[in-house]
Length: 624
Image (cartoon, rainbow, N blue to C red; front, side):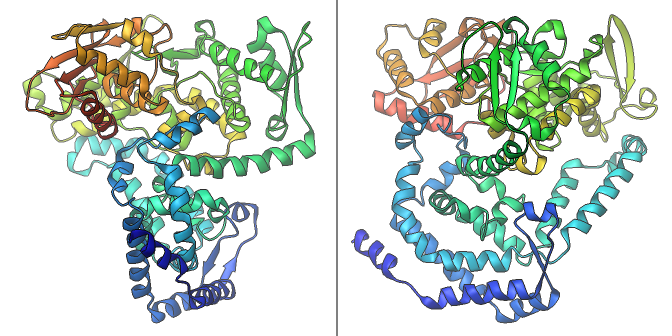
C-alpha cells in the first residue's frame, strides 16, 4: 500500500506549478537590479528586487501554497520512512565517512542510510521541484542592497575597534552594560534574515526539510548554484547542509579557480631537497602570488628520479605537516592532550616567525585546494578564526582543560565562596620574566565582581585565544585566505573544516584494547568480548565519535593510546562496571578517559546503546 501511495505521488504532476515558477522568475528579473561586479558574480548574480515587486508578491498571498508544499514534503518523509531521522540528523556529527572511496562504501551501513534515502526519495522530490524553486525565488529574494549594507557594516566595525577599549572599560565597571558578543552576532544574523522577503519562513522551511533537500542536492548539485543558492548565501541556512553537499559545492568553486590559474600560469613546480623540505619550500613560494600557488603542483626531490603523479606531492605535504610543528621553529605549541596545536605567543624568538606563519597558512590552503590531507590538527579556536567566527570560552577546554574548569567555576559559583580576589588583568611569563597584562584599560585597578565576571571570563579567553597571538593569527590567516577565500570556506563549521584539512583519524582499536584498564570487569568476561567485537565492527566515523565521547577528542595521541592524556597526566582508557536498571545507558567521564558500562543481556543490545550514546552524547560530555 505504501508503494502504491508513493507511485501516485510520483505520477501526480501539474504544469501550473511550472508556469508559476516561470512567471515568478520573469518578474524577479524584470523588477530587480542586477549587479555584475566580481563580488556579485560569485554570489550567482544576486538580484535585489524592488519594493514594487515585494508589494506585488505580498498581494498574491502565496502563504497557503507554501503550507501545502510543507505538508506534501512531510508526507514524502512519512511514505519513505525517513521522518524519524530528523532527531538523529540534528545530533549526529555531520562528518560521516566521506574522505576516501573506501569511506564512501561504508555509507550504506551508517545509521543515516543516506544512499538509500537519496535513491528512493529523489523521484518524489523532483515532482515538487518547481514549487520548491518558486518558494526560494519568493522568500530568498533580497530587498536591500547587500553591498552598501556590507560597506556600512565594515565602517561600523572599524569604528567599533577604535572604541573597543572604552567599551570594555565601561562594561567592567558597569556590569549591566556589558556588551554581549553572542547577542551582537545573533543581531547580525537576524539582520540578514530581515533583508529577505521571507527570511524567517525560509529558515524554518530549510530546517524542517533538511534531509529531503540534501537528498535533492546530492542528485542535482547545480541547484546550489542556481535556484537553491540561498542555502549557501544565507548564514542561518548553512548548518542544515550536510558536509558532503557543502564539500561538493566547495570543490566545484575551487576547481574553477585552479583551472583559471592553470591557464594563466601553468604548473607550480618545486625542485627541493628531501632533507630541507620546509626551508626550500618556504623560499620557493614566498614570492609566488595566489594564482601561481593555485596551479597544479609538481614536486621533484633533488638527486631522485621519481616522477610526481601525486605520490611525491602527498609525501611533500606529509613532511610539511610534521615540520610546521617542529619545536625548533617555535611556531606552535601543543595543547594539554598533545594532539592539537595553537600558535605560540612567544614565537617572536624566531625572527622570521611571521613570514613562516604566512607560509604555513598558504601550505594549509594549498592542501585544501588540491585535496591533500594533512596530519595536522589545530585547536578549535584556530579553526573558528579561519572561518571568521569569534571563539568562545568553551573553546578554551581543548587548549587547557584545567584552566577551563577554573573559568567554569568562576561563572558557576560566587567569587567569595571560591576565595578569589581578581582584577581585569593577567600575569604572564614571557621569556622568563613575569609581566602583568591589562585586559582592559587600567584593568589591574578594576575588580572582578559577580556582575562583571562573565565579561572577565570572555576577555581572558579572548586574550589567550586571540589577543596574545594577534600578529601570528593575522600572518597565518593572510596566507590561508590568499588561496582559500573567506566567502568559500565560511560555509563549513569548525568540525567540518578540521575534516576538510585532516580527514577522519585512523583509530587502531587493537592498540586501544592493549591499553585499556578494567574496573569491575575482567578482560575475559563475555561483556568485554562483546564490547570489543562491537568496536572492531564500527565504521571510521563511529570510531571517531566513540573516541570523542570517552576522551573529549577524536585525535589519537602521536605515540598511540599508551600516551592518552587525562586529568592526572597519562591516563589509559578504562571500562567501569556499573549497576542500575536493565537497559541503562552507558556514560563517559572525559577527564578520566573512562566509560561506565552497564551489564546488558546481549551483544545486540550493547551495540544499540553504544551507538545511541555516541550519536546523542557528542558535544555534551560529563565533567568529573
